[in-house]
Amino acid sequence: MGRVAGLTSEEARERLLAAAAEVFVERGYAGTATGEIARRAGLSTGAIYSRYASKAELLADAIKAHMPAELARLISDGALGVPVPDVVQHLGEELPHRPRQVSAMLVEGAAAARRDPRVAEIFSAELTAHLETVEGLVVAAQEEGSVDSSLPSGALSRFLLSVALGTLFTNMMDLAPVDDADWATVINRFITAASPND
Image 1: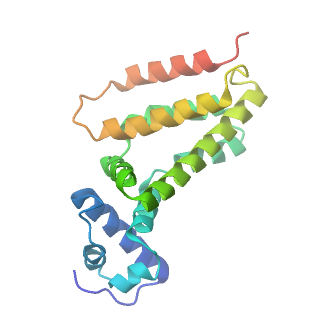
Image 2 (image 1 turned 135 degrees about the horizontal axis):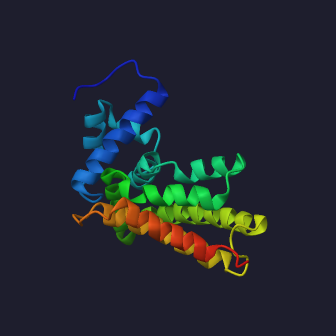
């Protein structure tokens, strides 16, 4: 693609992140050259390095940009007074239907984190932030009485995040899909098990 002129800073960033997602998924982190990302975005490599200090930071931003805004939606719904278990049920039922590109981006990030200390640092910080958000929601649900307060909030939060991440990985495999009604049954049973005993 030739150079694209007259873009705003935000438009250039969006083009870079879209191109980065494509190239990282196609070639893997190690096989991706920033020049190829710039070419596909119709920008110069200077457009990348004026925004990102390294390829690792570009990968991290691409992952964030292409992850579904589930936690943000969950927080928003909670602020509107929707019971946390109802929100978790809805989001849980959506897990098997997340885009394969999101799954592939996460896999690339995890693989790169094993080899690149900077990617590992960024990736770990992102997961820690997500875990803290989930734990805040679990604690709020325990305080409102919709989740059993005897359950350790840290362990429950790690379990929920692990299920979400694990689903991202299984979504990109050629596994036979799980029936939506069966999946909803399992989610509902888990929510019931985590509810306080009357």
